Length: 214
Image 1 (spheres, helix red, strand yellow):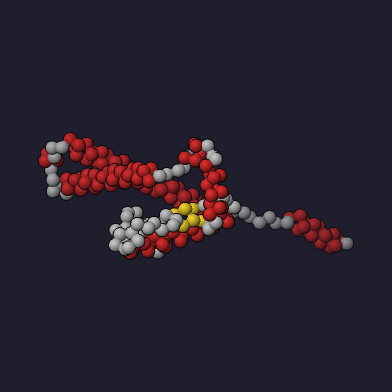
Image 2 (cartoon, helix red, strand yellow):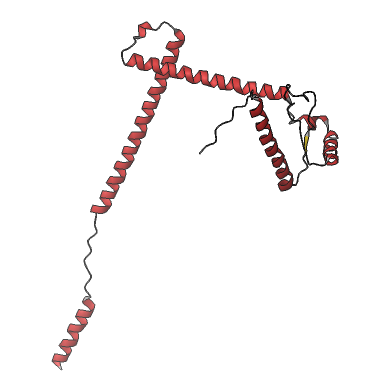
């Protein structure tokens, strides 16, 4: 069974958000550990937990960040190694909050465009079926855009019909040829008359004649 797609949106419920953070953060740290062990790569993770609820007495107290590996000196060593890289190498695959939002917005725009295009295609198909069924006459259409789209849709269907006809004719001709060829091979027989060993019979007759004469 396919897993339900997670909706990437801020969780407004405080308890649900904290439970999700606890679960996902644990999984993230486990993945970093597995990546470092299995692939023998240097890695570290620093995650700042969400601030506590404002209703509590420690509302101004920020919880410490969770790190992997657990050794702070090792984390500092990895960060120092990363800082020594050239600026272009450091930022090549880096994505901050602004970049993430831009990327998400771009994907959403593409999804909206694709959905609008699909909706438009469905509207044109519905219009075509209405015209074919006599529920709407062509002279009732006064939109050039609708007429152009309708004409394009009709042309596409006609092309698909011709392609299907060509395919069926090709399949029919191929099947007919194979049947005729098989029929010819079945009905055509070669009649052969067994050869008589006349040499043996002639020698046998000669031997009998010699014996009689003697």
